[in-house]
Structures are given as C-alpha cells and as structure tokens.
Amino acid sequence: MEVLELNDIQAYVIHDYADMLYSRYVLLKVEDRESAKKWISAIAADITHAIAHPETLEHQPSQTALNIAFTATGLKALGLHDENIRAFSREFREGIDTPHRRRMLGDSGKSSPDTWNWGNSADESVHILLMVFGINEEVCLNYFNELQSDYLAHGLSDNLHLDGLTLENNKEHFGFRDGISQPVMYGSGIQGPKNDMVQPGEFIMGYKNEYRVYPQSPLIVHEQGDINLLPADAAQTGQKDLGKNGTYLVIRQMDQDVNAFWTFMNEKTKNQDGTVNTLESTKLAAKMLGRWPGGAPVTKFPDFDPGIISDDNDFGYAEHDPEGMKCPFGSHLRRANPRDSFEDNGAKLSVTLSNRHRIIRRARLYGEPIIGSPTNHNPSGPVGILFNCFNADISRQYEFVQFTWANSAKVKELYNDPDPFIGAQEERPDLEQNFTIQRQPVNKTVKGLQRFVTIRGGAYFFFPSITAIKYLSTI
Image 1: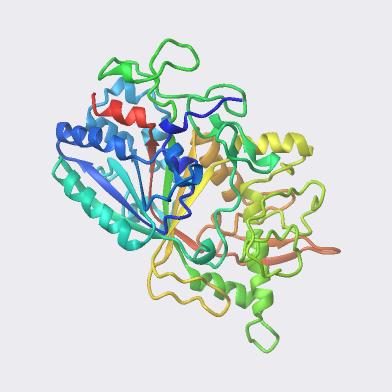
Image 2: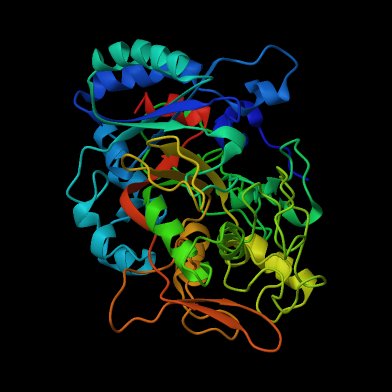
C-alpha cells in the first residue's frame, strides 16, 4: 500500500473541515505576474496541508484553514509555458464551458453558461481560487481581511466572493444531511467501510489508481523555473512531475429552488382533502434521495424515518435490495454510486467498477440558513450549494457521473427517469421526466419531474501540492 505524503497535500482533499463552519471563496485575477508570484511564494507556507489538520494531530484545533487552486488561464497568466499547460488533461485545459460540455453536463436553459455569474468562457478573470475557512464567520472574515490587504498589494484583484456556511447537523437547504457517502483513500491513515476504500490515484496524482496504473499527470515538458523543487515522475519517465500530490477540483454553484422542491413533494402526496401529508411528502423526497433527512439510508429503513442523525455508509444493494424495493433504482444515492449493484454485474465486480468513478465531494452552502421541510420551504432569497469535488481524472470521474449516471434518463428498466436532484432538465412539452418507485405488483410512477437546481457558475481548477505551489512562484 502506498503511503500518502500528507505534508505535501492540501488538506481539503483529505478532510472536510467539519469544524470550519464558515468559508469565503475568492476569485482572483493576476494583474502583475511578477508581484503575484512573490505573494504565492510567501503564502505557500500558510497553506493548510493534510498532516497539520487537527483531525490528525493531538493539539488544539486551528481556528482557520487556507487552500488555493488555479485555472488553466491562471497558470498561463503566471507565465507557465504553453507546452507545460498542454501537459494537463484536456478537460482542465478546455474548461467547463465548451459546447460539448454544455450538452454533456446538462447546462442549458436557465443553467446555460451564458447566464452564469462567473466561470463562463466570456469571463477570463478567474485565474486563482483562494479558499479561506474559519470556525465561525467572524474568524473567517478577519483572516480574509488580513489576506486581502496582502494580495491586493501584490498584483492581484478580486472579482467575486462566494461565502459558504454549514448548517446544523450538516444539512443542506432541501433539508437532508449531506456529505455522508464518501470514498476513503488507502494510505491516508483514515479507515472506512471495506467497499469505500479506494486507491489514492483516483484522487491524488502520483499514486496508482483502481486500474493499478498512475493517472495522467502534468509533467514539465519545457524547462522553466526551479524544476529541482519538483519530484520525479513516479512512472519513471525521467521528467519532473508538477502534478504529484495534487488533483483537480470541480466547482459548481447550484441554486436550490427549495419552494419548488417541497411544493412538488407536497402536491404528489397530498391528502384527499388537499392538505399536506408531511409524512408521505418526506418519504417521497427520501426515496428520491436515498436517505432520510437525518441521513439514515432508506435501504435500511425503507418504510419510515427512524428520526436519527446518521452517517451510516456501510451498506450495499446486491444482497439486501437487488430489486430496488427499498431504495429505488432512480434515487440520487443509488445513481451517484451504484456500490455493489452496478448494472448486471456481480457484487465484487460492481464494487470494482463503481470505485473507478468515485469522487471526493465537498460542499458549502450559501444564502439564508434555511433547512427545508414540507412545512418550511420559503427562503427570503437565493439559496444553494457550492458543490466541490476532487478527482484525478475529470472525464472518467466527475463528467462520467454527471452525464452517464445522473443525466441519463435510462437506468435499469426505466426510460424516462433522470437523477431527480441533479439530472432533471427544464420542463418541455416533448420531454417526459418521471421518478419510479419499485413496488409489487406494480411500480409507482411519479410523473412530471421538475428541475430543482440551477447552475449559476463553475470552473475546473488545478489543486496543486504545496511543493507545486512553491514551484509556480519560480517560473
């Protein structure tokens, strides 16, 4: 088993910063290349790396955390040679807003990049993402103010602040406990359920992945900067590896229409007299997600909400729910990670195949801190999720999950059932979208599925190692 070089890996890949209840993501533009590189050199020592995170050491928890990421445009703005940029994956280089990816990711209509607040092809100002975390809002913003005065004096401008928060019991605005179904990397020092243990190369470059090969990593092709800082390519090509201990970060700003979501659930489950049936409304939403509001999996509690806060992720479908009678085939949980029930494969092979498409998911919420329910679903303004995910292969991981597992309306023997949370398209007269609940003797079909999430921005970032951050300041 390969042991991860945790002191060189930015901590957010390994830890979810559960103790950091407030965050500010800052989109920076390089105005003065040389001055900006001096700031990057100075800030490298302050980046939170995995081994220094309080969850791994016996000391008083830190009150802040700091991470940094770069777009392909940002690397070019800093002076990275075109040949070296071309060594990065095609997805990262091209960015999230291409005609192909618009179709593949379902970014059309109100979610079209043409309407985004940031990150589309017309926005060339997203160079660097600075991620500032604090144990509360005051601590976070005080730390940010210190950082801001420094980077503004070093050739950088900030164009947008995206503030994020964490709600009670880590629930998101629709009202469900979030961030439970996560893979765990071998060599990270963290243990998880056997079927959730995944080779580190699925998420961190420079280590072998689930295919037992090294993932593509950006190697230095055109010599520039202090390449002696960089490690040699693990695949023994003789080249220096800019990617080792780094990864790719996908960010999507997703508005949640909490009112439409619960209005839909209430309407589909209302009593004969037209009143809201809160139990049935909650049950329908739980079936669509695959978990009850507190996090308990419907696979283990198919008929009623146990009313507990749960992080239970140690379960499969092959033995206990092969026909989808407990957790529907079309549920978000089952689609985003089929576990041991991947198409028609056996349990062991299914786990192997599923783990080749895993992502490490992080999320921060924005807007009013509302926790939705059948009787509480009217926020005063826009609310949503800052979706973050880490993967070493954007195409095989994030894009595959979104396109093949979420957006596709065909799953098992269903033909009009996209993922009810992240795969549904805007309503069209020619488009039938349903959610099917498997039952005996006849399935129940909930018709007229709507889109409850709208994309407001997004980008692909390189999330480098501490070493690579230092190197970038020398190019």
